[in-house]
Image (cartoon, rainbow, N blue to C red):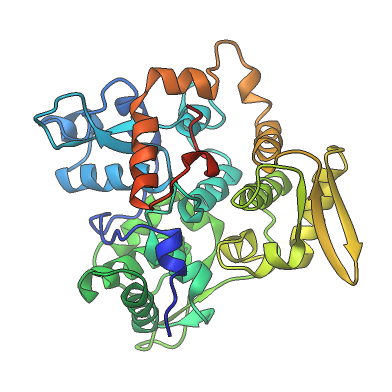
Length: 365
């Protein structure tokens, strides 16, 4: 039976992280470099400028792209086929020195990046297909590394004309556990695994834990309330998810937000009741949002475009970053980095989308 959901949501991209989970400081450091030099990751002295080893340079480049903080496109040199990295407006909003949280000191920012890693829309698909399968398509919450590897292999084979070797997917699965399991709960593991856990901020989200007896390790997605997940981040993700299908006023059921592949409920591993509580809290101060119930089903209604509403809610979480002096609009940023629009058009062309205006995009041309 065919299942094309993975191809619709994610690029075929595996093991580009060089086995390194994202580390403290990497994303801010990468942003600061590429905003002034799109060739920063390709330079001979990149390890010196970024202060990491050569393989870590590759990992930083991958994670910056995977979190949608950079987009890649060809430079102006028509003789070069090198892909340069350009910072997105979202990166400017989050990671600049006068941005929302440049050093990712708030756990809400890590939840936001986790959402960006998994989220997808035409022209801005996920670059982490193994992560997408693990959170959105895998039919279990408890698994061995081999279990998750085989599920990803199956979805890859059903979704892409050519897939990677299984060993590459196994590296992704290992990286997933390194990224999300709290350090104090890790037992055993390969040399360096504990260091990776200590160095990765996303372990603080507590999305996974290691379970099982010694010698037969299993892993499990945690669930339940998320005290560190702000209500506005949940509301942002819900509206951002609704924006995949509409630019206009409308509604979306809480059941979809909780249970659909690609939706916040699966990404954050939270229940419909948790989503309802967060939306009620945010709607209390946003007249454009309302929770309604009809025929036993609760829905979130929005009286204007969900994409813009999502950003209004998110910006409030960080004391209205967009209102700060000299903060660039999306249009300003697009003029500064025209290659961002070219990168998006290239991706849309690859998707055979005839009318790019149908896609809600990161950058406004």
